[in-house]
Length: 591
Ligand code: ASP
Image (cartoon, rainbow, N blue to C red; front, side):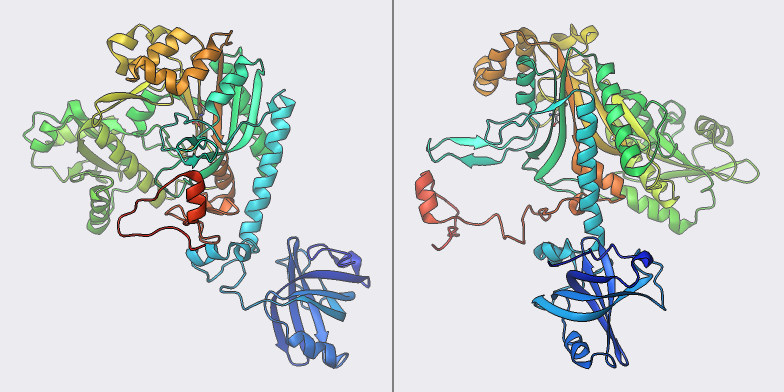
């Protein structure tokens, strides 16, 4: 028997028990005639004691143990004189009578403690060591519990989990596909699914009216903190449902997760906001509602006073930061620097403060009278001591810069508390999005999303104005999920492909199988998918999804632990009938 208990289990009630523990040596300390060792496993840490006076041979052996050695000990549970309130086993220690080294360890490249000294790349390369650390372990357990509670809820609502294939044909989620060559059909390729979208719709045609799956998806796109080339979705689809029924069902899932995993009761229904309102008031389709500071449009107030920048701008708008009227020159310069960053792209920042005597002083006093400035503060509902920050330019770009500025101020003012969660449904997204570069429309969600029936007539006349029955779930400014009511009519689907610039032949080639399925009684249906990694990282209070994934890729899509992507052998290439043509680089593995 390797162990009678785990390293997180023993308490004061176990005093005098003879126990066997197995685990890793986290650290060891020699204090005079005593050696103390922290023994760690998945469940916790237990202190071991070796006494030179009682058993010098054993104590000397213990002093030789290196970090991360795997050992088994036998000993007696005793009360600690120096209790450690920070760990659950902190009241006891084990007086060791037998020590058995199960395996030795090289000196680990970083210390395996909560606040490790290991940099990102090193931790990724030795992920098995990183995963031994408490914060990662906590994330893995959180993830497991959230998956378990998801399954419990979905089952309680009558959903069944059905797996869909990974080797498929391209799915239209807007990213690049990962491609897998076929050995049996040389020159032909599978794509890895960007999502199970078409399969879940086909399952609806097959009559499985409540489907879900916790499933891996693959998208070959540039990576960010909340993006990985492979990630996990809670993917769902339902038949014979309205949009309201879908939102209510999945509001239930999110509430269940908050309650069962974090002990948080959300009684109220989630707020619903149209895409238009989200963009107008927050400059983003995923507003963070933990704080107000709504964007106000000032375009009508600022024109015609001789200030060229505002006069020529398509849009002028701003936000009002409560109590920031005393910002120093340096703080204002910092904010100006912030909005001028290339990724934000504003040219400059105009500010106006409401002074203690109620007058408003601005950086553009030359052009605007006290009365003019009074109309601004009225629009912002600004009070004494407030600071108005104003940007101008092309409408969409200015709104999105204001969104960034709002988030930055929210952060600086401590308004984005990680322990408060404000969920929001954003609804009524536009169906299509115009791309200036390729001069064509793209589906904002995906091509199977249904237009709103009342906007249907505009599909041919002004496609950009058509709204979709599409919705996103946003929590604290993070897009957690999205879905839509689907098109289930073959003719409308064909119209949609046409609006997206597909020829009939192309549509048939790419989605013929779905169109064929729609000929055999497709029920009305709709669904949603949640980014499971994002949901877990939100629950864990993290900014990145990397540490809620056991084996993530780095920011250039590499798994540095297993060293992939990597070249394959000539033999494998030959079998696949593939020739690599990289100029100046020979990229096949030496066999
Ligand atoms: N397949 C969609 C996505 O991955 C979600 C959905 O429409 O259900 O974003």
